[in-house]
Length: 417
Ligand SMILES: [Zn+2]
Ligand SMILES: [Zn+2]
Image (cartoon, rainbow, N blue to C red):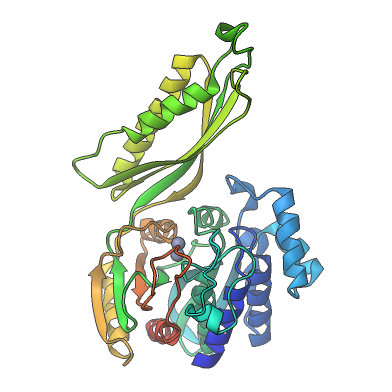
């Protein structure tokens, strides 16, 4: 597959950006492309355990995005299948000689960002601006295209071992990797790669292994109290909103840790009721992050204590639930040697750094890498510069399409051995 075809695929994904776990159009295009290449695929229960998705999409969301996918040209039967069995797709490539089993994670979901409409934004100029209300503001459209291009190149079988390309839903909010791990996708994988475009690096720059990712957990906390008349019997009520407010301030006031960087944020706050009623229910969502997996565990314990302590103050009950999770992983030196060799063989890679920072983001691909490393395998998370004109998740984010074939060439070199 040549650069113009990779670009065309990227633009196709870009124009129909979809939320996590609702990537029906995206997954059906991936499936059709792989079928056209004759590449075997794994989908459904062996690709993702939908039962372990902490907060699955609602039926209304499934209907809405399913309808849009069908309108865009996907078959209703296929969409119905994805609605029931999940949107993960795995391309299975077999080499013609003995060698390791490789995994490559590419993510496929988009963000609730309303894409730039100004005439100097490349997707507007090129006529592929997203019209779905969601936007590929993190480059996952490019990742999906890279995964397909790589499958196309490797279908000749001229490489050692096997390659599994994991097209992962719902990276944003770090929700999709865990249910794929629960389906067993990392079992038997010896070397795990993840690739990301952008990172505010210029095109031609590659970081072989990211070293400063943050582990994170995303939480909901629900407070259940009791409604009462706010004037006639306020003492009979149990004020869920007050407890949620107390918990919010307590979480934001958790101390820093000396041994690692941490972050906390409370991002949403909802309560039911009206001004003359003691509110019976409130919900907050919050996240914790750290550069250390063990510090994150302690931070999570303290946030839980803040939630439960606040609930106790107001006589309400609180229940927390983790709906997203990512860990920290470190690249393996032995694997970085392979990446370094491959980078040297791709002329368009002008600046290569074996290890480097990524700016403190989180990505649940590190969970996949951790799984493989804990089973004795190797892993690394590669950044491929794409001269992004605006930061990740911004409405003017874009990738330099010249970076797409660089990523494909680099990964092809690594996998051909
Ligand atoms: Zn992102
Ligand atoms: Zn991303």
